[in-house]
Amino acid sequence: MFSLCVAERQEGEHRVVTLADGREIWERNVTVDPAHRRATYTVPGLNGAEHHQAEMRVEVDHRGGARLIWVTDYLPHEIAEQRAASYDVLFTELVAAVNSHGG
Image: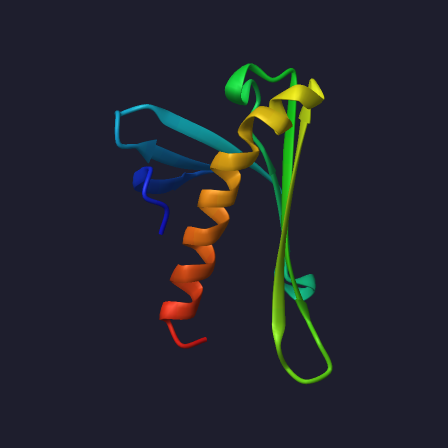
């Protein structure tokens, strides 16, 4: 679903994402809560960060529509600012993938 990713697999509590250049990103699942439509994960050292954590959750409105919220936190904060454009691309690709399934 993301243009940067060529493969993924689950290894225990990690989702391992293989990038086009062969690098692997090990996302450690913190919370996977289908009942609350919420998942959080961390990637230690991502982009040189001393801390990284992200949350994805789906909120359903009273008409049955849904909204995806994706929050990513970094320390130092400057990394979040530096990475903002790349996250905009990832989010756009994610929304396109969901919409292409008629969902």
